[in-house]
Length: 116
Image (cartoon, rainbow, N blue to C red; front, side, top):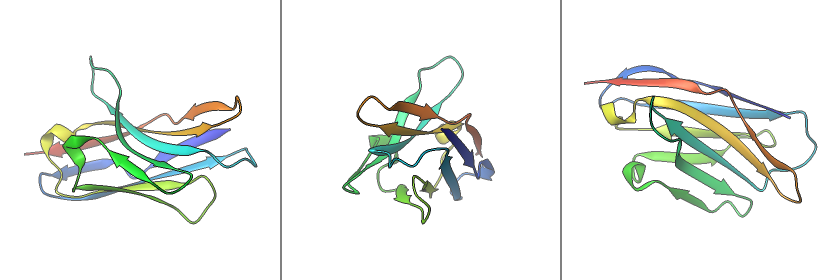
């Protein structure tokens, strides 16, 4: 199973970016998919998650600004990030979580940089 992120880049504060995540190599549907982010020297934190029922949850710091949604392809999601702030600067990782012992698969990450 492979997870690949795309769509990172550099933007000024107040701008928007859209990250995409695609999964390949499995016929199984992920129970949930999520976006995490990490800055150097800190732990990787959950940004947004979508589960099989399409329920979503978000980190408090991004509520009202970020939206996670499913893509058209199986096990794909995207993250729309609006009103970006310099504090959103991080490497963003996509993860797919599979039940029944399927574990999780992570992408390599995509850099998002927000300048003031």
